[in-house]
Length: 364
Length: 225
Image 1 (cartoon, rainbow over the protein chains, first blue to last red):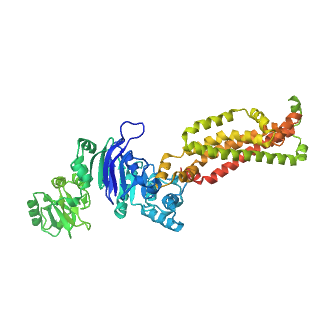
Image 2: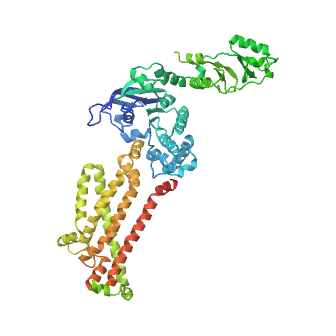
Image 3: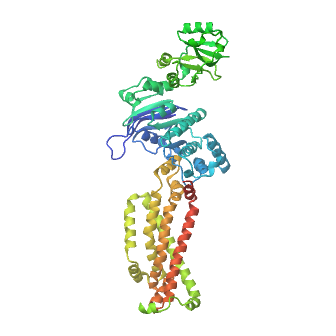
């Protein structure tokens, strides 16, 4: 969908290039994250795609067409653009800000208004905010407007330059989640610039790690980059807790669950003891119609006929197959049994994970 | 001066007898001001457009406008008289030349004050340069431009009486001021001076109103903050 071939940019009066010789392909419907330290040319690269910056060498094609062969303002009508400072027009209401590109394209009023309403709903903005001015909105709301404005004419391509960099961490995570959700429905081709590794991992289908001068050190799915960094630079850039970061990207469903010591509440204590012995542990999970009620320790079984008679201790945390292994690990370290219970969407017991099983998730 | 102080401050009978002349002078004062500011604004818009497009000419234009502004007003009227005579044209040329520096600089400053990220996002949305300037940059420059307009207008109201040196058709309310000075007669002097101030204040207030109408987003934002 977007192809950069030997693209380079030397700014006037500078000896070393901002981007030396970069080739990169972004597939249709994926989020490609450009990440790297400052001076790595990630923003420059992004801006060359919509010709805010003209490359000094190489060619860029979007949807099979060379961008240099199109009039810049016409090219940009089909490429959404979101930046950190949002860049909303302060003198226009939210509704008119969102209507920017439809107005430029000459849509009629009814169509524009319907589209604005649809977009405000899509990005989770109250319809009544449409009549407000940008300065009356919070940073997070403004950034949603920025995204809505970029999506207004339904462009196939979206360029995002650290769009969530200026909002507080809580709002940032929410906006990231919303973007992931939006992308699931819209399937845009997105190039996303950030220097935040967590953001890159959360959003990127693939991430391009850039070194100073636009040198492409590695390009691939975040999980693969974390598993096998291609160079010392990438290793250093990813930081010391690469394993934990990878765990954050691997779902519990990818790990092999242990059946674990589990008995039905109606089981006899004798039965429970047998299960403990088999699993070589001193506790057993108690299930109610397949759902974990909690656990009981070996000592508590004494003097009882059936497991049902003993009050089970609730598991503090249970995880689901869609949760990350990192989340499971976190639950595990805070659990007295040093295991974490996995349940399905209905809350039915699936099995459990211990440290060894979680660690195995990192094996290729 | 001592003679003037001996005179009563205002002789209301004179005012009553000269209502028609006072009205005529007030209207003339207003006309001279509006023409000067309008023409000055039109010229400044053109100059500012050139300076914004071709940055290199900003300093020369600004320097030239600065030289014009620095010429003492009385001297400028006298310098222009041999060429254009004791005419309204002479008065207007002088008055216009004083507005240009203020207006030119305020327009350029207003456009320059548009945040880069707003300009960039407008460009990235697909605005052509011309359309962006008209639909995004100019509206955002309005507060600064209006400030320049207010200064230029008030200043011009103050300069018009000096043009009265060219004759009674060019001085607006200044005619009364000269009349009073010449005849050591306080009443026309005061009428001329007070009405000049009143005119300046009224025009300034009107321009503030216009600015508010043109920039609804600014007040709303303040309320929010």
